[in-house]
Length: 253
Image 1: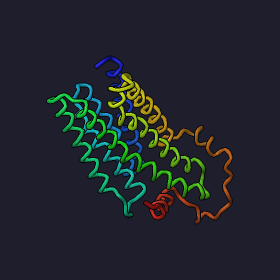
Image 2: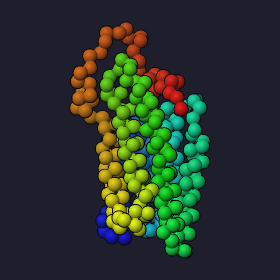
Image 3: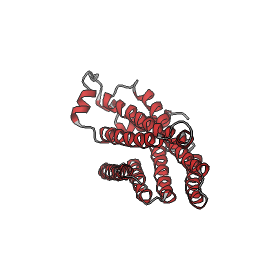
Image 4: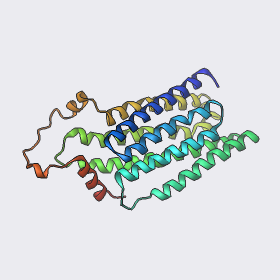
């Protein structure tokens, strides 16, 4: 493993784990259970870089599978609680995907083969796509609902930002799905592009998560700069908790 790749794994480990810890602290203080799932998912995904540093992609598959399943829990609790959703199906798909990652990684070490490595990487790419495609859809559906309501724009922006972050995570997964075929045919250096894609997406993800969960007053004021609240009676004001309940009742699948 070259020093650039090793540095990437260390940066990934620190960024995701530290962000996950801060999100959990915020969740505990606000008693937001769904956010605890999300924080734990970031920590688990960050910890996956430890076995990868030692070349154990099968070990990393365990942490990745747990982390991505926790993302599904976050989506289910945030957008679909007590509503019909494909949650169970997606969990089963992720368990299969993590199993494929581990099995084909171990198999490729016993019998070196680009095909086996490709199946391993493709399993990882699809496993990323499942929760983040769902999160993109759920966030966009919620955004379409809340943007018509009389609420502060920074609340609306949260759903938009969450959808953007989910989509950003799909880009390196797409690169990963075609990495080996391109690397052995027309683009030998495509693996470096994939690594850079994961690093850039990780940095952007952390920045957006900070804005999303720890929105600075300056950013909040910027989003709300053109907002003039209507004069309404106090008993008809909508809280963010009531807003989420409304979203869970109205969102479709």
